[in-house]
Image 1 (tube, chains in turn cyan, green):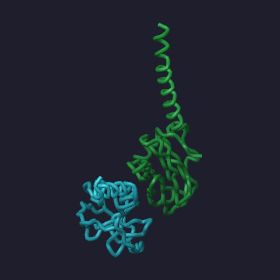
Image 2 (cartoon, helix red, strand yellow):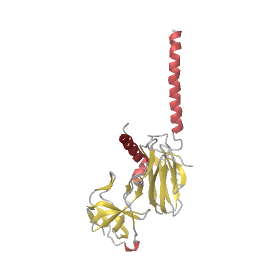
Image 3 (cartoon, chains in turn green, purple):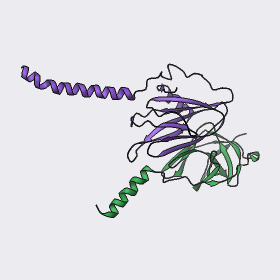
Image 4 (cartoon, chains in turn brown, red):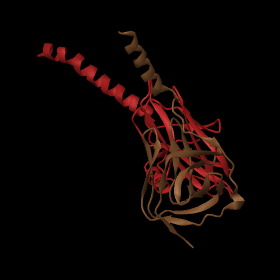
Length: 128
Length: 153
């Protein structure tokens, strides 16, 4: 076998077997006292590309409430669906919204912010 | 005639032995506890102020791979196909891990009186399959649990 071919095969198999992909995370500080964001309901499904070929659907009709604020935006959670981000491991996540756009996720166990590659519009219906 | 029978016997015996071996293997892998739908877990609800995490595996694929399941490093059960168990814990942050040739981890929060459902999936590995924990929606978890058998202690 050609040495390059053997090296590529080893790298490919190694990639399958070990933890090689990680969600981009940045330490952050959640200020729950400043939960100023208004609750809202999603008026349409949102297909979110979370990277590495993984997608998550934020479901139409789910109701979201503000938990607090990060420097990157307001943190929202819902009891209507579970939300996780995924690479080699899976982490529970809340959404982060700035100027009515989804900008990333807050990982409550790791206490980190994971940015989206591209901000996404959300069909938000404000709730009282 | 006796000669023909004599020649067929070893073949038949081998088939029977093979069938018996398969039954034994499957029997050894089978989950034997009561079904969730037939015998609800006890206690039915966690102690006041605690939450509950159900951990279950529907996948029979890779049934020989049954790693331990740990919560914050403590072994709480095994990834038995068609089986489930649960743990009651104080509200807080938890990491659920399984290890085959690699470690797979799920991090989640648990609130007071909350019930969470963690499904153990299986994916391809290098030498053996990888069992990975994933958080699922409550309605999905509650439904999938119905036909599974209790494997807790």
